Length: 93
Image (cartoon, rainbow, N blue to C red; front, side, top):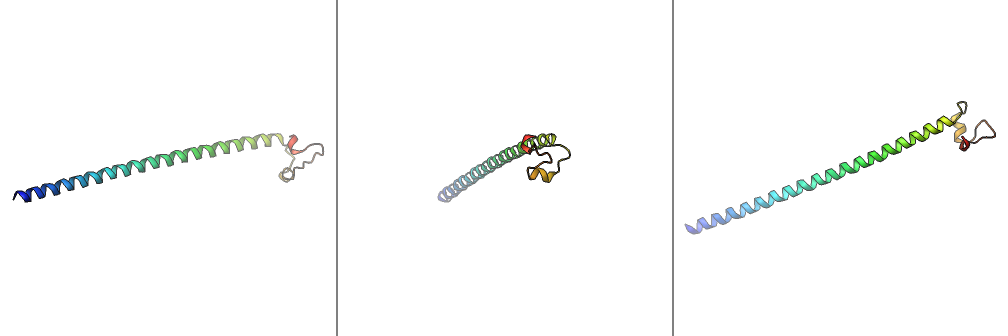
């Protein structure tokens, strides 16, 4: 009878250790997933911020360019870097 009790206690101990190990692995996995999600979010935010800055800079650049181009200059002249004024180029605007 004592052997049976000892055997059952040993099995209970092993089961408790196995459950504790599974719980720890689960916590570790969850922490790792949260860390990865946080890093992904930070990367996405940095990428979005970089993209926003690029868009803003492009918008500013286009605004400056469009302010300096005479209204009667057609877009195809700008692409060809020729304007209807022989003494000026696009770079001089």
